[in-house]
Image (cartoon, rainbow, N blue to C red; front, side):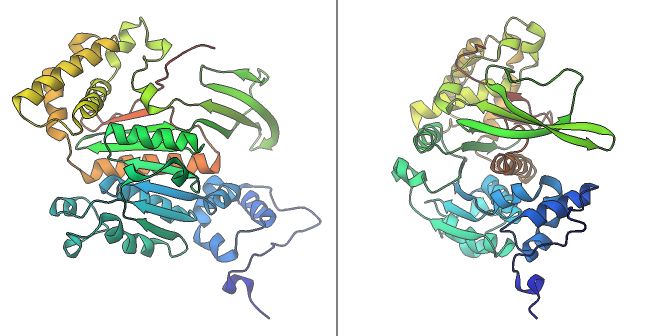
Length: 387
């Protein structure tokens, strides 16, 4: 008799007295797996820990997800590692650049023998070794040559370490194709993650409150669209709440004010990281010059002027933008530090996994990481705040 576990065939777990054994957390996992129609026994063994963490339904969505990853540098290495280990269906790597000696210090999928080779092509074999079940595809053409229809086959698009104009173009194209989009970048001790999921529904599990849950608008971007009782777990009555988040494209978010709770609140405004100002100034510089600022006096003066203007646009106290921070930010531009890319890549991959699995609230919509302060605040940057 053929052993379904050995062959990787889908299996049905035993049921006792007509009921699935779901009296505890482990029982719930068993019950969910038993109800699954597609996941195989060897996949259950391979992904056991994460199935227990986020459930078999989320894992099934992951195993059906086609992800596009653009620009394969240190940050993308971390994202690729986490997504492939999580078990997405396919990962397509797009990069037209070649491996340089500078890449060797921070990218763990390449070696000295790859210098001069295409970055995506060089990284693909070692990415594939992480999980042979995931299809790894390579595209060595320039992402700027792609038309909006190119993004149609993908369930998620992630662009890393690109200039603002390219990011905006990719974001606009993914919106035309109705595909969720993430942008991210690392600059030494600093970095960011931006999400444009267009419209995203997700489910959270929470303890039921004494105040009845109702369908309502929770904020300018978030609303409750459904809820249901989940029963009693560990003496607590739980409920499943479906929420909807609305997102803005990068082009609009980059010129949007801070959320209403910051307006006129000097204490909160003083707590806003000057990294927000510097990222906006960097993107403005990139739009005008097509590159990062160098250390020439002219570029330094222009960047300082841009940063001062952006700080005023955000209505932030002028004393929170110091010459020391500007200097450190400019010194870090273009560099890659493994601990920072590991943190950003882990955060980004986890958010992508949550979005694909439709669980937990995703980033809304700009996360900034300051490695000097070990802080990663999130700001909801949208052009209009009305409820």
